Image (cartoon, rainbow, N blue to C red; front, side, top):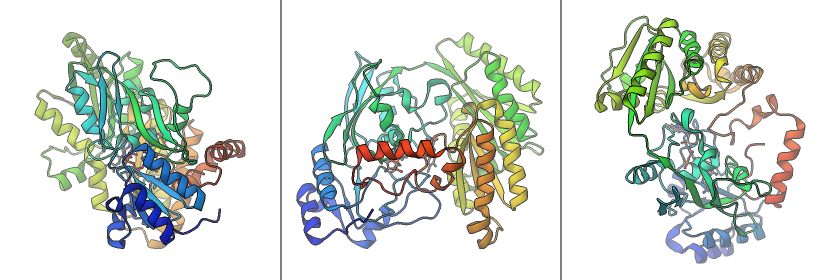
Length: 465
Ligand SMILES: Cc1cc2nc3c(=O)[nH]c(=O)nc-3n(C[C@H](O)[C@H](O)[C@H](O)COP(=O)(O)OP(=O)(O)OC[C@H]3O[C@@H](n4cnc5c(N)ncnc54)[C@H](O)[C@@H]3O)c2cc1C
Protein backbone atom coordinates (compact mmCIF):
# COMPACT_ATOMS: atom_id res chain seq x y z
CA UNK A 1 0.00 0.00 0.00
CA UNK A 2 1.62 3.33 -1.05
CA UNK A 3 1.26 5.68 1.92
CA UNK A 4 1.82 9.43 1.92
CA UNK A 5 4.03 11.54 4.18
CA UNK A 6 2.58 14.13 6.51
CA UNK A 7 2.75 17.47 4.67
CA UNK A 8 2.74 20.92 6.29
CA UNK A 9 -0.97 21.26 5.43
CA UNK A 10 -1.83 17.93 7.07
CA UNK A 11 0.26 18.86 10.11
CA UNK A 12 -1.63 22.14 10.41
CA UNK A 13 -4.91 20.20 10.23
CA UNK A 14 -3.72 17.79 12.98
CA UNK A 15 -2.85 20.79 15.18
CA UNK A 16 -6.22 22.39 14.58
CA UNK A 17 -7.95 19.14 15.70
CA UNK A 18 -6.05 18.46 18.95
CA UNK A 19 -4.36 21.80 19.66
CA UNK A 20 -0.68 22.76 19.20
CA UNK A 21 0.28 21.55 22.68
CA UNK A 22 -0.92 18.03 21.97
CA UNK A 23 1.27 17.52 18.89
CA UNK A 24 4.92 16.38 18.87
CA UNK A 25 7.21 16.69 15.88
CA UNK A 26 10.68 17.14 17.43
CA UNK A 27 12.93 14.11 16.95
CA UNK A 28 14.16 14.12 20.55
CA UNK A 29 10.59 14.04 21.88
CA UNK A 30 9.50 11.43 19.32
CA UNK A 31 12.10 8.97 20.71
CA UNK A 32 9.80 7.90 23.56
CA UNK A 33 7.20 6.81 20.98
CA UNK A 34 9.67 4.94 18.75
CA UNK A 35 9.89 1.82 20.93
CA UNK A 36 7.94 -0.32 23.35
CA UNK A 37 9.26 -3.11 25.64
CA UNK A 38 9.98 -5.44 22.70
CA UNK A 39 13.71 -6.20 22.48
CA UNK A 40 15.73 -3.34 20.98
CA UNK A 41 13.55 -2.09 18.11
CA UNK A 42 13.05 1.54 17.09
CA UNK A 43 10.64 2.99 14.51
CA UNK A 44 9.94 6.72 14.55
CA UNK A 45 6.55 8.23 13.75
CA UNK A 46 6.56 11.47 11.76
CA UNK A 47 4.13 13.09 14.19
CA UNK A 48 2.54 12.19 17.55
CA UNK A 49 -0.94 13.51 18.38
CA UNK A 50 -2.54 13.23 21.82
CA UNK A 51 -6.30 13.57 21.38
CA UNK A 52 -8.63 13.64 24.39
CA UNK A 53 -12.02 12.73 22.95
CA UNK A 54 -13.55 10.23 20.51
CA UNK A 55 -14.52 13.19 18.31
CA UNK A 56 -10.87 14.29 18.04
CA UNK A 57 -9.77 10.72 17.22
CA UNK A 58 -12.53 10.58 14.62
CA UNK A 59 -11.38 13.83 12.96
CA UNK A 60 -7.77 12.52 12.90
CA UNK A 61 -8.87 9.24 11.32
CA UNK A 62 -10.92 11.03 8.63
CA UNK A 63 -7.96 13.25 7.82
CA UNK A 64 -5.48 10.36 7.60
CA UNK A 65 -7.86 8.20 5.59
CA UNK A 66 -8.34 11.00 3.08
CA UNK A 67 -4.57 11.54 2.75
CA UNK A 68 -3.53 7.84 3.01
CA UNK A 69 -1.38 8.38 6.07
CA UNK A 70 -0.61 5.37 8.28
CA UNK A 71 -1.90 5.64 11.88
CA UNK A 72 -0.60 3.67 14.88
CA UNK A 73 -2.51 3.72 18.17
CA UNK A 74 -0.39 3.56 21.31
CA UNK A 75 -1.24 2.88 24.92
CA UNK A 76 1.53 2.92 27.53
CA UNK A 77 4.08 1.22 25.25
CA UNK A 78 4.68 -1.79 27.50
CA UNK A 79 3.86 -4.28 24.74
CA UNK A 80 6.22 -7.18 24.07
CA UNK A 81 5.36 -7.87 20.43
CA UNK A 82 6.03 -4.50 18.80
CA UNK A 83 2.31 -3.76 18.26
CA UNK A 84 2.61 -0.05 19.02
CA UNK A 85 5.65 0.54 16.78
CA UNK A 86 4.87 2.87 13.86
CA UNK A 87 6.69 0.72 11.29
CA UNK A 88 5.42 2.80 8.34
CA UNK A 89 6.01 6.19 10.02
CA UNK A 90 2.97 8.47 9.74
CA UNK A 91 0.83 9.57 12.68
CA UNK A 92 1.05 7.96 16.11
CA UNK A 93 -2.07 8.48 18.21
CA UNK A 94 -1.05 8.42 21.89
CA UNK A 95 -4.00 7.57 24.16
CA UNK A 96 -2.44 8.92 27.36
CA UNK A 97 -4.97 11.77 27.81
CA UNK A 98 -7.86 9.28 27.88
CA UNK A 99 -7.13 8.78 31.57
CA UNK A 100 -10.48 8.98 33.36
CA UNK A 101 -12.56 6.40 35.18
CA UNK A 102 -15.95 7.69 34.03
CA UNK A 103 -18.29 5.65 36.26
CA UNK A 104 -18.33 2.76 38.69
CA UNK A 105 -21.87 1.36 38.70
CA UNK A 106 -22.24 -0.53 41.99
CA UNK A 107 -25.83 -1.52 41.16
CA UNK A 108 -24.85 -3.49 38.06
CA UNK A 109 -21.22 -4.27 38.96
CA UNK A 110 -19.89 -2.45 35.90
CA UNK A 111 -17.51 0.40 35.22
CA UNK A 112 -16.97 2.70 32.27
CA UNK A 113 -13.38 3.68 31.79
CA UNK A 114 -11.21 5.46 29.24
CA UNK A 115 -8.46 3.39 27.57
CA UNK A 116 -5.51 5.43 28.92
CA UNK A 117 -6.19 4.58 32.58
CA UNK A 118 -3.31 2.65 34.18
CA UNK A 119 -4.62 -0.85 34.92
CA UNK A 120 -3.57 -0.89 38.58
CA UNK A 121 -5.22 2.49 39.23
CA UNK A 122 -8.47 1.04 37.92
CA UNK A 123 -8.05 -2.13 40.01
CA UNK A 124 -7.44 -0.02 43.13
CA UNK A 125 -10.44 2.24 42.43
CA UNK A 126 -12.85 -0.71 42.23
CA UNK A 127 -11.16 -2.47 45.18
CA UNK A 128 -12.02 0.63 47.22
CA UNK A 129 -15.67 -0.27 46.63
CA UNK A 130 -15.19 -3.94 47.59
CA UNK A 131 -15.12 -5.06 43.95
CA UNK A 132 -12.64 -7.02 41.87
CA UNK A 133 -11.35 -6.49 38.37
CA UNK A 134 -9.06 -9.53 38.23
CA UNK A 135 -7.11 -9.02 34.98
CA UNK A 136 -3.74 -8.25 36.53
CA UNK A 137 -0.81 -8.31 34.09
CA UNK A 138 2.58 -8.22 35.81
CA UNK A 139 2.93 -4.80 34.13
CA UNK A 140 -0.29 -3.53 35.79
CA UNK A 141 1.49 -0.55 37.37
CA UNK A 142 2.52 0.82 33.97
CA UNK A 143 0.25 -0.52 31.20
CA UNK A 144 -3.12 0.96 30.13
CA UNK A 145 -6.42 -0.88 30.19
CA UNK A 146 -6.94 0.00 26.49
CA UNK A 147 -3.65 -1.74 25.63
CA UNK A 148 -4.83 -4.74 27.67
CA UNK A 149 -8.07 -4.92 25.66
CA UNK A 150 -6.17 -4.61 22.38
CA UNK A 151 -3.85 -7.46 23.36
CA UNK A 152 -6.43 -9.76 24.96
CA UNK A 153 -4.27 -9.57 28.07
CA UNK A 154 -3.96 -11.97 30.95
CA UNK A 155 -2.05 -12.13 34.21
CA UNK A 156 -1.61 -14.44 37.20
CA UNK A 157 -5.24 -14.39 38.40
CA UNK A 158 -6.89 -15.17 35.06
CA UNK A 159 -6.34 -18.88 35.79
CA UNK A 160 -9.37 -18.72 38.10
CA UNK A 161 -11.21 -15.66 36.80
CA UNK A 162 -10.61 -15.68 33.03
CA UNK A 163 -8.78 -13.30 30.69
CA UNK A 164 -9.88 -9.80 29.77
CA UNK A 165 -12.25 -11.38 27.23
CA UNK A 166 -14.56 -12.32 30.13
CA UNK A 167 -14.69 -8.75 31.47
CA UNK A 168 -15.32 -6.47 28.50
CA UNK A 169 -19.00 -5.87 27.86
CA UNK A 170 -18.98 -3.04 25.36
CA UNK A 171 -16.53 -0.73 23.58
CA UNK A 172 -16.73 2.68 22.00
CA UNK A 173 -14.58 2.48 18.89
CA UNK A 174 -13.51 4.97 16.23
CA UNK A 175 -13.32 3.15 12.90
CA UNK A 176 -10.65 4.00 10.31
CA UNK A 177 -13.38 5.84 8.34
CA UNK A 178 -13.85 8.15 11.34
CA UNK A 179 -17.26 6.71 12.26
CA UNK A 180 -17.83 6.24 16.02
CA UNK A 181 -19.69 3.07 17.12
CA UNK A 182 -20.48 1.08 20.24
CA UNK A 183 -19.66 -2.58 19.55
CA UNK A 184 -22.33 -4.25 21.73
CA UNK A 185 -24.45 -3.63 24.82
CA UNK A 186 -23.77 -3.19 28.54
CA UNK A 187 -25.26 -6.61 29.22
CA UNK A 188 -23.88 -9.84 30.67
CA UNK A 189 -25.37 -11.85 27.81
CA UNK A 190 -25.11 -11.10 24.11
CA UNK A 191 -26.63 -13.09 21.28
CA UNK A 192 -27.38 -10.34 18.80
CA UNK A 193 -25.37 -11.05 15.69
CA UNK A 194 -21.61 -11.22 15.14
CA UNK A 195 -19.88 -10.19 18.36
CA UNK A 196 -17.88 -7.09 17.42
CA UNK A 197 -16.76 -6.58 21.04
CA UNK A 198 -14.93 -9.92 21.03
CA UNK A 199 -13.52 -9.17 17.57
CA UNK A 200 -12.04 -5.89 18.82
CA UNK A 201 -10.46 -7.59 21.87
CA UNK A 202 -7.02 -8.79 20.79
CA UNK A 203 -7.19 -6.96 17.43
CA UNK A 204 -3.96 -5.11 18.34
CA UNK A 205 -5.05 -1.69 17.11
CA UNK A 206 -5.61 -2.88 13.53
CA UNK A 207 -9.42 -2.54 13.27
CA UNK A 208 -10.34 0.58 15.21
CA UNK A 209 -9.29 2.86 18.07
CA UNK A 210 -10.95 2.13 21.41
CA UNK A 211 -12.10 5.28 23.20
CA UNK A 212 -14.37 3.93 25.99
CA UNK A 213 -14.56 0.56 27.72
CA UNK A 214 -17.45 -0.93 29.72
CA UNK A 215 -16.03 -3.48 32.15
CA UNK A 216 -17.72 -6.22 34.18
CA UNK A 217 -16.75 -6.34 37.88
CA UNK A 218 -17.19 -9.11 40.45
CA UNK A 219 -17.40 -9.21 44.26
CA UNK A 220 -13.99 -9.18 45.87
CA UNK A 221 -12.93 -12.30 47.81
CA UNK A 222 -11.95 -11.39 51.36
CA UNK A 223 -9.24 -14.00 52.07
CA UNK A 224 -6.29 -15.58 50.35
CA UNK A 225 -3.32 -17.83 51.05
CA UNK A 226 -0.01 -17.97 49.21
CA UNK A 227 2.51 -20.81 49.06
CA UNK A 228 5.76 -21.42 47.23
CA UNK A 229 6.77 -24.97 46.26
CA UNK A 230 10.43 -25.75 45.40
CA UNK A 231 11.34 -28.52 42.94
CA UNK A 232 14.56 -30.16 41.85
CA UNK A 233 13.54 -30.14 38.18
CA UNK A 234 11.50 -27.97 35.80
CA UNK A 235 9.58 -30.97 34.58
CA UNK A 236 8.53 -32.12 38.07
CA UNK A 237 7.19 -28.63 38.80
CA UNK A 238 5.31 -28.55 35.50
CA UNK A 239 3.86 -32.03 36.09
CA UNK A 240 2.43 -30.88 39.45
CA UNK A 241 0.51 -28.05 37.73
CA UNK A 242 -2.23 -30.08 36.06
CA UNK A 243 -2.37 -32.48 39.05
CA UNK A 244 -3.54 -29.57 41.27
CA UNK A 245 -6.59 -29.06 39.06
CA UNK A 246 -7.22 -32.82 38.85
CA UNK A 247 -7.33 -32.80 42.66
CA UNK A 248 -10.37 -30.53 42.37
CA UNK A 249 -8.81 -27.14 43.12
CA UNK A 250 -8.74 -24.00 40.98
CA UNK A 251 -6.08 -21.73 42.46
CA UNK A 252 -6.41 -17.97 41.99
CA UNK A 253 -2.81 -17.96 40.72
CA UNK A 254 -0.39 -20.69 39.69
CA UNK A 255 2.90 -19.33 38.44
CA UNK A 256 6.04 -21.17 37.35
CA UNK A 257 9.54 -19.69 37.84
CA UNK A 258 12.87 -21.12 36.84
CA UNK A 259 15.86 -20.90 39.21
CA UNK A 260 17.84 -18.62 36.87
CA UNK A 261 15.04 -16.07 36.90
CA UNK A 262 14.93 -16.05 40.71
CA UNK A 263 18.74 -15.65 40.86
CA UNK A 264 18.52 -12.60 38.59
CA UNK A 265 15.69 -11.08 40.64
CA UNK A 266 17.81 -11.47 43.79
CA UNK A 267 20.81 -9.82 42.07
CA UNK A 268 18.80 -7.08 40.37
CA UNK A 269 16.24 -6.28 43.05
CA UNK A 270 18.18 -7.05 46.20
CA UNK A 271 15.37 -9.31 47.42
CA UNK A 272 16.18 -11.27 50.55
CA UNK A 273 15.44 -14.87 49.54
CA UNK A 274 17.19 -18.06 50.60
CA UNK A 275 17.81 -19.87 47.29
CA UNK A 276 18.78 -23.42 48.26
CA UNK A 277 21.17 -25.68 46.33
CA UNK A 278 19.52 -28.34 44.17
CA UNK A 279 16.35 -26.32 43.59
CA UNK A 280 15.70 -25.71 39.89
CA UNK A 281 12.10 -24.49 39.74
CA UNK A 282 9.29 -22.98 41.80
CA UNK A 283 5.50 -22.89 41.76
CA UNK A 284 3.89 -19.84 43.34
CA UNK A 285 0.34 -20.84 44.25
CA UNK A 286 -2.46 -18.64 45.57
CA UNK A 287 -5.90 -19.73 46.74
CA UNK A 288 -8.64 -17.22 47.52
CA UNK A 289 -12.23 -17.17 48.81
CA UNK A 290 -14.36 -16.10 51.74
CA UNK A 291 -14.07 -19.07 54.07
CA UNK A 292 -10.85 -19.66 56.01
CA UNK A 293 -11.56 -23.38 56.59
CA UNK A 294 -12.07 -24.03 52.88
CA UNK A 295 -8.87 -22.15 52.04
CA UNK A 296 -6.89 -24.18 54.62
CA UNK A 297 -8.35 -27.43 53.27
CA UNK A 298 -7.41 -26.43 49.69
CA UNK A 299 -3.84 -25.58 50.79
CA UNK A 300 -3.58 -28.94 52.52
CA UNK A 301 -4.74 -30.75 49.38
CA UNK A 302 -2.28 -28.78 47.23
CA UNK A 303 0.49 -29.66 49.67
CA UNK A 304 -0.29 -33.36 49.22
CA UNK A 305 -0.21 -33.01 45.43
CA UNK A 306 3.14 -31.19 45.55
CA UNK A 307 4.61 -33.92 47.77
CA UNK A 308 3.55 -36.55 45.21
CA UNK A 309 5.69 -34.68 42.65
CA UNK A 310 8.76 -34.72 44.80
CA UNK A 311 8.45 -31.14 45.99
CA UNK A 312 11.45 -30.39 48.24
CA UNK A 313 9.95 -27.63 50.34
CA UNK A 314 6.71 -25.66 50.68
CA UNK A 315 6.86 -22.17 52.08
CA UNK A 316 3.63 -20.57 53.38
CA UNK A 317 3.50 -16.78 53.36
CA UNK A 318 1.91 -16.08 56.73
CA UNK A 319 1.94 -12.27 56.68
CA UNK A 320 0.96 -9.76 54.03
CA UNK A 321 4.59 -8.54 53.93
CA UNK A 322 5.77 -12.09 53.16
CA UNK A 323 3.10 -12.42 50.47
CA UNK A 324 4.20 -9.16 48.89
CA UNK A 325 7.82 -10.31 48.91
CA UNK A 326 7.01 -13.55 47.09
CA UNK A 327 4.82 -11.76 44.53
CA UNK A 328 7.63 -9.24 43.98
CA UNK A 329 9.94 -12.04 42.89
CA UNK A 330 7.47 -13.08 40.19
CA UNK A 331 6.49 -9.56 39.13
CA UNK A 332 10.02 -8.22 38.73
CA UNK A 333 11.31 -11.25 36.85
CA UNK A 334 10.76 -9.79 33.36
CA UNK A 335 12.57 -6.56 34.25
CA UNK A 336 15.45 -8.47 35.90
CA UNK A 337 15.95 -10.70 32.86
CA UNK A 338 15.91 -7.65 30.62
CA UNK A 339 18.47 -5.81 32.72
CA UNK A 340 20.83 -8.81 32.62
CA UNK A 341 21.06 -9.50 28.91
CA UNK A 342 19.78 -8.81 25.43
CA UNK A 343 16.85 -11.18 25.10
CA UNK A 344 13.85 -12.20 23.03
CA UNK A 345 10.63 -13.16 24.78
CA UNK A 346 8.24 -15.74 23.38
CA UNK A 347 4.76 -16.25 24.85
CA UNK A 348 4.01 -19.93 24.17
CA UNK A 349 0.75 -21.45 25.38
CA UNK A 350 -0.27 -25.14 25.40
CA UNK A 351 -2.98 -27.21 27.08
CA UNK A 352 -1.66 -27.22 30.65
CA UNK A 353 -0.96 -30.98 30.93
CA UNK A 354 1.54 -30.57 28.05
CA UNK A 355 3.74 -28.11 29.95
CA UNK A 356 6.35 -30.76 30.94
CA UNK A 357 6.91 -31.68 27.25
CA UNK A 358 7.05 -28.02 26.30
CA UNK A 359 9.73 -27.08 28.83
CA UNK A 360 11.78 -30.20 28.06
CA UNK A 361 11.64 -29.38 24.32
CA UNK A 362 12.61 -25.73 24.90
CA UNK A 363 15.73 -26.78 26.82
CA UNK A 364 16.67 -29.33 24.13
CA UNK A 365 16.28 -26.67 21.43
CA UNK A 366 18.50 -24.35 23.48
CA UNK A 367 21.24 -27.00 23.59
CA UNK A 368 20.96 -27.56 19.84
CA UNK A 369 21.18 -23.85 18.93
CA UNK A 370 23.48 -22.76 21.74
CA UNK A 371 21.19 -20.45 23.70
CA UNK A 372 20.24 -20.23 27.35
CA UNK A 373 16.59 -19.62 28.18
CA UNK A 374 14.87 -18.40 31.32
CA UNK A 375 11.26 -19.57 31.52
CA UNK A 376 8.50 -18.39 33.81
CA UNK A 377 4.84 -17.67 33.49
CA UNK A 378 1.22 -18.44 34.07
CA UNK A 379 1.59 -22.22 34.36
CA UNK A 380 -2.01 -22.72 35.44
CA UNK A 381 -3.03 -21.43 31.98
CA UNK A 382 -0.35 -23.50 30.21
CA UNK A 383 1.26 -20.14 29.34
CA UNK A 384 5.06 -20.14 29.46
CA UNK A 385 7.16 -17.03 28.75
CA UNK A 386 10.39 -18.19 27.14
CA UNK A 387 13.14 -15.59 27.50
CA UNK A 388 15.94 -16.41 25.10
CA UNK A 389 19.18 -14.93 26.37
CA UNK A 390 21.82 -13.71 23.94
CA UNK A 391 24.65 -14.38 26.40
CA UNK A 392 27.68 -15.60 24.45
CA UNK A 393 25.84 -16.23 21.17
CA UNK A 394 27.57 -14.62 18.21
CA UNK A 395 25.72 -11.74 16.49
CA UNK A 396 25.38 -13.90 13.40
CA UNK A 397 23.78 -16.79 15.31
CA UNK A 398 21.55 -14.34 17.21
CA UNK A 399 20.39 -12.44 14.12
CA UNK A 400 20.11 -15.34 11.70
CA UNK A 401 20.32 -18.92 13.01
CA UNK A 402 18.19 -18.29 16.12
CA UNK A 403 15.05 -17.89 13.97
CA UNK A 404 15.26 -21.63 13.19
CA UNK A 405 15.45 -22.39 16.91
CA UNK A 406 12.42 -20.19 17.65
CA UNK A 407 10.55 -21.87 14.77
CA UNK A 408 11.29 -25.25 16.36
CA UNK A 409 9.92 -24.05 19.70
CA UNK A 410 6.72 -22.87 17.99
CA UNK A 411 6.46 -26.12 15.98
CA UNK A 412 6.64 -28.05 19.25
CA UNK A 413 4.07 -25.71 20.85
CA UNK A 414 1.67 -26.23 17.95
CA UNK A 415 2.23 -30.01 17.91
CA UNK A 416 1.20 -30.04 21.58
CA UNK A 417 -2.09 -28.31 20.70
CA UNK A 418 -0.94 -24.79 21.55
CA UNK A 419 -0.35 -21.50 19.78
CA UNK A 420 2.18 -18.68 19.40
CA UNK A 421 0.91 -16.19 21.97
CA UNK A 422 -1.28 -16.55 25.04
CA UNK A 423 -1.42 -12.84 25.98
CA UNK A 424 1.33 -10.69 24.41
CA UNK A 425 -0.10 -10.59 20.90
CA UNK A 426 1.53 -11.15 17.51
CA UNK A 427 2.30 -7.56 16.53
CA UNK A 428 5.46 -7.19 14.53
CA UNK A 429 7.89 -9.72 15.93
CA UNK A 430 5.81 -12.91 15.86
CA UNK A 431 4.02 -12.41 12.57
CA UNK A 432 6.67 -14.26 10.52
CA UNK A 433 5.95 -17.39 12.57
CA UNK A 434 2.15 -17.36 12.02
CA UNK A 435 2.22 -19.89 9.11
CA UNK A 436 3.55 -22.49 11.58
CA UNK A 437 0.08 -22.56 13.12
CA UNK A 438 -2.32 -21.03 10.62
CA UNK A 439 -3.41 -22.05 7.09
CA UNK A 440 -4.01 -19.89 4.00
CA UNK A 441 -7.75 -20.00 4.83
CA UNK A 442 -7.09 -18.19 8.14
CA UNK A 443 -5.10 -15.47 6.41
CA UNK A 444 -7.82 -15.03 3.79
CA UNK A 445 -10.49 -14.58 6.49
CA UNK A 446 -8.32 -12.15 8.48
CA UNK A 447 -7.51 -10.08 5.39
CA UNK A 448 -11.22 -9.97 4.53
CA UNK A 449 -12.09 -8.71 8.03
CA UNK A 450 -9.31 -6.10 7.88
CA UNK A 451 -10.52 -4.91 4.46
CA UNK A 452 -14.10 -4.43 5.70
CA UNK A 453 -12.95 -2.33 8.68
CA UNK A 454 -10.07 -0.51 7.01
CA UNK A 455 -10.53 -0.23 3.25
CA UNK A 456 -7.31 1.76 2.76
CA UNK A 457 -5.21 -0.25 5.21
CA UNK A 458 -4.12 2.86 7.16
CA UNK A 459 -4.59 1.53 10.71
CA UNK A 460 -1.51 -0.05 12.31
CA UNK A 461 -0.14 -1.49 9.06
CA UNK A 462 2.52 -4.21 9.12
CA UNK A 463 1.10 -6.08 12.13
CA UNK A 464 -0.23 -9.63 12.81
CA UNK A 465 -0.28 -10.93 9.20
C1 LIG B 1 7.46 -6.28 32.81
C2 LIG B 1 6.30 -6.63 31.94
C3 LIG B 1 5.39 -7.58 32.39
C4 LIG B 1 4.28 -7.93 31.61
N1 LIG B 1 3.38 -8.83 32.08
C5 LIG B 1 2.28 -9.14 31.36
C6 LIG B 1 1.30 -10.06 31.87
O1 LIG B 1 1.41 -10.60 32.97
N2 LIG B 1 0.22 -10.31 31.08
C7 LIG B 1 0.03 -9.72 29.85
O2 LIG B 1 -0.96 -9.98 29.20
N3 LIG B 1 0.96 -8.86 29.37
C8 LIG B 1 2.06 -8.54 30.08
N4 LIG B 1 2.99 -7.65 29.57
C9 LIG B 1 2.80 -7.08 28.23
C10 LIG B 1 2.08 -5.70 28.16
O3 LIG B 1 2.16 -4.99 29.38
C11 LIG B 1 0.63 -5.92 27.74
O4 LIG B 1 0.61 -6.45 26.43
C12 LIG B 1 -0.25 -4.66 27.80
O5 LIG B 1 -1.57 -5.04 27.54
C13 LIG B 1 0.16 -3.59 26.81
O6 LIG B 1 -0.55 -2.40 27.19
P1 LIG B 1 0.00 -0.95 26.76
O7 LIG B 1 -0.96 0.06 27.24
O8 LIG B 1 1.39 -0.78 27.16
O9 LIG B 1 -0.14 -1.07 25.17
P2 LIG B 1 0.89 -0.71 24.01
O10 LIG B 1 2.13 -1.53 24.13
O11 LIG B 1 1.04 0.75 23.90
O12 LIG B 1 0.05 -1.22 22.75
C14 LIG B 1 -0.29 -2.57 22.62
C15 LIG B 1 -1.18 -2.76 21.38
O13 LIG B 1 -2.46 -2.19 21.59
C16 LIG B 1 -2.76 -1.20 20.62
N5 LIG B 1 -3.52 -0.17 21.33
C17 LIG B 1 -3.16 0.46 22.48
N6 LIG B 1 -4.16 1.28 22.88
C18 LIG B 1 -5.17 1.16 21.97
C19 LIG B 1 -6.46 1.73 21.82
N7 LIG B 1 -6.96 2.60 22.70
N8 LIG B 1 -7.22 1.36 20.75
C20 LIG B 1 -6.75 0.47 19.86
N9 LIG B 1 -5.54 -0.10 19.94
C21 LIG B 1 -4.76 0.24 20.98
C22 LIG B 1 -1.43 -0.78 20.04
O14 LIG B 1 -1.56 -0.35 18.71
C23 LIG B 1 -0.65 -2.09 20.12
O15 LIG B 1 -0.95 -2.91 19.02
C24 LIG B 1 4.11 -7.31 30.33
C25 LIG B 1 5.03 -6.36 29.88
C26 LIG B 1 6.11 -6.03 30.66
C27 LIG B 1 7.08 -5.00 30.15
